[in-house]
Image (cartoon, rainbow, N blue to C red; front, side, top):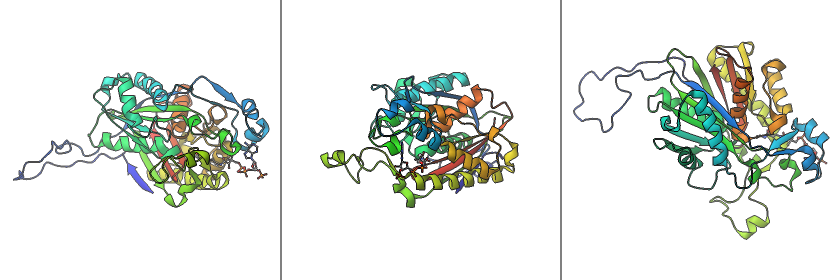
Amino acid sequence: MTRSDFSTPTTVSEPSSKSATPAPFNNPRVGRPALRTVSMTGVGSYVPPQILTNADLERLVETSDEWITSRTGIRERRVAAPGEATSDLACEAARRALSAAGLTASDIDLIIVATITPDMQFPSTACLVQQKLGARRAAAFDIQAACSGYVYALDIASHFVSSHTYDTVLIIGAEKMSAFIDWTDRNTCVLFGDGAGAAIVQHRPHSHGLITTCLGANGDDATLLELPAGGSARPASNDTVNQRLHFLRMDGKETFRKAVAAMVAAGQEALARSHLTIQDIRCIIPHQANHRIMSAVAERLGARPDQIFTNVERYGNTSAASVGIGLDEAVREGRIQTGDYVLLVVFGAGLTWGSALIRW
Ligand code: UT7
């Protein structure tokens, strides 16, 4: 597991003698603190208004509200409008995060969008978001870590900020899962929903902010959860379309098992690196895949039920948007106050996993 620790700023000194060869770039690190602390100065989220209930799904596939609720905890999920793309969901969440931080689009230096449901193969969804927001100064790129994407993006953003490369980074986890779900497959179509969660990542003097992040991956299990065709390995063809290979596929049982183990390990790693115990954490926001997974993770971490934030019953699994939406709602509901410790733990296709420990 790779780790990043942002709590201890260090300093690099000026070179002792002038170099004979001038530096090719203006290196912002020279003469400045090498690392600065990193804070999340604004969060926001957006879910589309259309609600798809378990009763609606009973009319689509052989399922029941009882099965879905008891196995997953999901009662309803949101579905984007046909003309609404992932970038549209992302922009709405981004505007709310900017507003919470008291910033405008022109303040953004970098946009990182985490998604497995991009508007198209290329250009990146981040570039489309940059254009729609009017964030003309911002560099932009996508990352892909499935349901772990928000924590991966947060980790990447924190390095840009702590190293003085950028002052203001917008991260967004955004998904239009409904566009990649096989609506004839009851194993998967009941599980997912659309939405976006965003955050502004900056340095705030005297603020603790992000304490540590832990990331992990295991490509050995890449086929447990995948969208098999449409890439360079299996380009789109009549055959791939006929075999329904452009939709998400999942081995649910095995994914469940791996998810619990990985999220527990990631949570424990973040606590150990921060010298905190689970009792110190005010709010734990696990990836919202399934209430049984969240209960198992909480139990193994030794957490009380009231420490766990859940909204899976209303939104289902929104992949990279999941913990971003959760964090925004937890803040708005007053579940997180200034000074509270917050733990995000995530898991997704790849396989990928991670955690982030934040002092709010
Ligand atoms: O976000 C990325 C990570 N993803 C996850 O973490 C998801 C992890 N997996 C899960 O959450 C669970 O494995 C599921 C919710 C997907 C499935 O729950 P399960 O308790 O593992 O059920 P199962 O796969 O063992 O299926 C049990 C039965 C099967 O029938 P048979 O073969 O025993 O006759 C399924 O065909 O339930 C059947 N089934 C359904 N029945 C009614 C599967 N889906 C449905 C459904 N409605 N929607």
